[in-house]
Length: 245
Image (tube, rainbow, N blue to C red):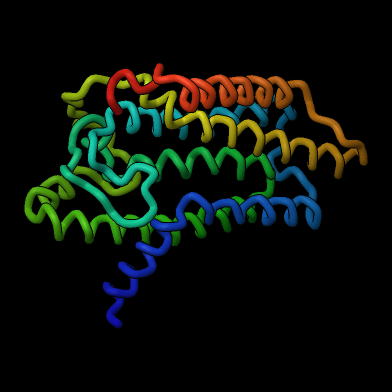
């Protein structure tokens, strides 16, 4: 099997299980904290917590910029195969080709930073690089084969992962707040509960007491309430489906 075929095969496999594979970071983070509890970045706890949460919220904001303008007929949360009825080249896609994966990485990176171990952070960056590189390769192979020159022309103007600083082309679609609320409450709650878990673990290793600091307790409560309210609206009503998406 050629390297192109190998990358494509591995990328499609990672694409299929892309929602589950990053979960291995939880046991890895737990192991790192237990075996080598330390603070490589010597900042006050509240300051460090705010910085890490801000990174994750930035990732969520990037995802919102994508989801709010998502056209019909894209892969979305589909896991079986690549799907695309059009090449989206407007909005955030005018400055970066894979903004969803950029957003995902930043959401996880904030959590990774909170472990406060520089070697763990470097290792995770390398793992995400290998992981997303193969998924992006498989997606681009699919898009190139389906859309040909149209895709290749766009790919010459938008970098794959790190956004360019100019050339924004406003989306022609109307931003859908309902689509964002319907699809992103899980990610928001995942951020809240991930930070809360790490905070409790860090406090236990430091004080031998199970406790959560006020900052992360309030964050957990807010994200949990948002999760319950939005999930109820999605499952029990049609409020979030008014725009037809």
